[in-house]
Image (cartoon, rainbow, N blue to C red; front, side):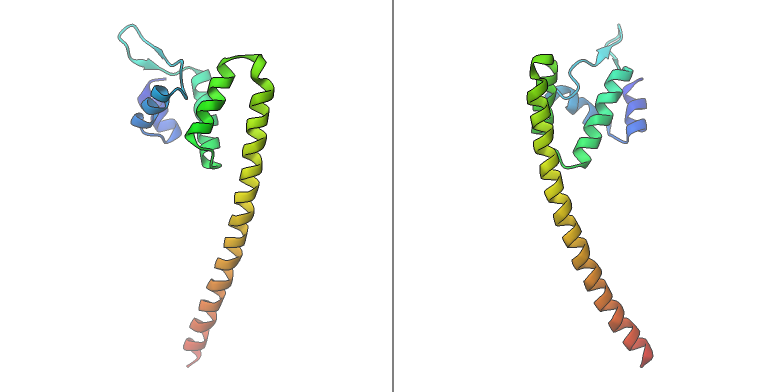
Length: 122
């Protein structure tokens, strides 16, 4: 796939895809003879992974570390597992915080709705 096709498919700008390549998140994007990027299915799997992890709140730095470990091969399996476990724990904390925020928002909205109903009665 071309960079334009990948950009459209995954909702990422071409600049973002180039940036990911430049910083090592997509280290092995192949090129055609005329130097045009060509994304393989494997590249696309990495893009899906990166998008998923970014939406879960993982930082670029953590993802770079993960990719670097992955490139080192099976000797880093335990390190990668630990990194993902740590990120899962941080995500659980963020999710708990978000649930609390949602409860507070629901309460505040309910309070405003009561005021609106009262004003409509008058």
